[in-house]
Image 1 (cartoon, rainbow, N blue to C red):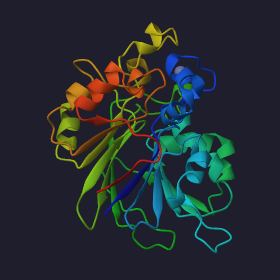
Image 2: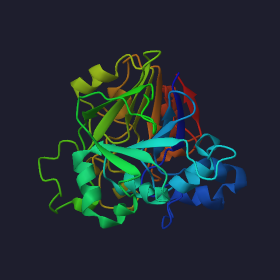
Image 3: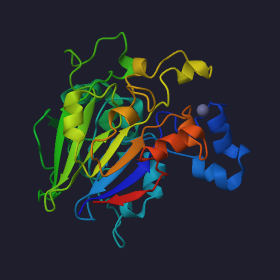
Amino acid sequence: MLRVVVLGAAAGGGVPQWNCGCPVCRKARSDGGELQSTELQSTQASIAVSADGEHWYLINASPDLRQQVTATPQLHPKAGQLRHSPIAGVILTNGEVDAVAGLLSMREGSPFTLYAHDRVLAILRSNSIFNVLNEKNVKRQAIEIDQAFEPALPDGSPSGMEVLAFAVPGKGAWYLEGKAHPAGGDGTGDTLGLRILDKSSGKYFYFLAACARVTEDLKSRLAGASLVFFDGTVWRDDELIAAGLGAKTGQSMGHISMSGDHGAIASLAGLDIGKKVFLHINNSNPALLRGSEERKAAEQAGWQIPPDGTEITL
Ligand SMILES: [Zn+2]
């Protein structure tokens, strides 16, 4: 059985974002009253997954990781141990700030393995602050595209999970825009999708926190999955511009919109997916607001917008 905990579902900045006065962020602070405010708050996107209920792998390490670990009993040190963490590894799907900055909160000497495409490992190598993760304790293992692997537990025994990474249409990290990528190359590997399979039951789910468009190849991969986490950054492509929050479209940031003829909801309709969950939802996205037309449309189409801490088993 695979257990998955949604540690956070928000895009970069979270909800509320520190410097944002948009309607969603205002409501998440206080405007909607205490209860509504708590329901609306969302930390930056990351999930934890385990095949044995004891050892956990994080998919991406968000800047909110410390808060997420504190809020998640499954990730606390074992009772009676002075130093321990159930986190056996971290799997990175891209090098964006909201996917890697949490690694800096994991610097206190506990052993775990860091899995990422070599393009992302090259970014970490080129930023010396990540050397706080001493390679004696934190092994870095390159993920090869389209080559399934089974992460090992700290004692070398198998984790019971198989991870398959594949390239997804997307963008490199924005802080490298217009700059030389430390790994050079054509960008393949900057954005990964993952299939995580439970070796004992054969069930699997997909994780795509970033995806610029749904290709036919991607549709055929996702069809029949028990669970898909999918990029829910924006409701519509020009929403940041329309709200006066920025100059970028969803597409220019490498993110598909939820709505529209080529959006995620329409593109993944009718694919026989057990559970569809949006992740990496920007605070500008009105689907975050319970009772909004956009939220209703997403839910009617079978999509879930998960509160932090949501646990799903398959
Ligand atoms: Zn906002």
